[in-house]
Amino acid sequence: MSLRVWMETHREELLRAWSGRRLNWTALCDWFQSVGLTNANGDAATVHCAKKIWQRVGKHLAAQRERADLAQAEAEARRAALRRQRDREAAEENDLQARMDRLAETAAWKRKQEAAQPTAPPPVPVSRTTPPSEPDGETVPEGFVMLDLPRLPGVSGRAYEPVDPSLPPVRKGERSPITGIAWSVGDDLPGYPSKRNYEYERDWLRDVGRLLRHRHPTDLTLTFEEARVMRNAKLRIPNL
Picture 1 (cartoon, rainbow, N blue to C red):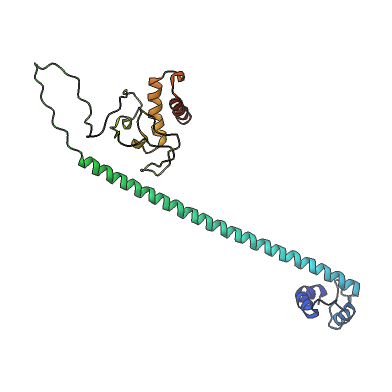
Picture 2 (picture 1 turned 90 degrees about the vertical axis):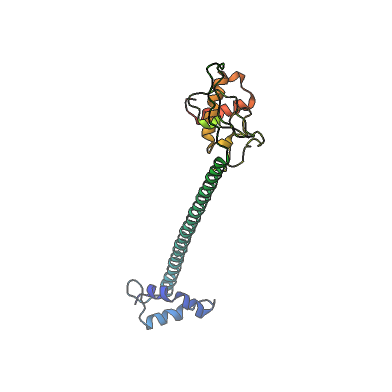
């Protein structure tokens, strides 16, 4: 039997048996020869040869343990990454469910508000003798006002919805009650549509940007806040 194979199999056992004492290589070589353990050439191992085999076996087993430890660490890292991915997917799913719940609550609130609004009275016939008057505007719920904004192509109907002047302006960092996404481009701009009428800030920037450009053909007349909004609108809306 190969002495190297025997040492690989019994190295730890031999170390425990000698309990930290120096190995008696002369006695060991005599025992190796008596049980038929030989070197790679099939010869009885000398003390020098046995020591060299012992050292090589020690390095081989140490490298083997190192590879096993590395493989175990990599496997644990993969398992940890998989756990993080599952946790992230679960968090995203919970976030999506929460957003869907908020959307459903907002839709139900809007339906309730619309049902509570009084029906507009039927138009009153106008006598031919009555001087013509200006066409009636939209029916504005009590307590709401209409902003004095020009009707422009490309500006959505949300820009012209009635607003409640008792509500504070929407501030940067507040979250949309519909999507749950935080507003990132400053506060509401006085005199312009409120973010409260929109789901996404990009849509608000498109409408307000077009209204600003109509009112200010050149950027030189923009206020500081108007310029900030216009700058962000140009970054997000191509060909504004």
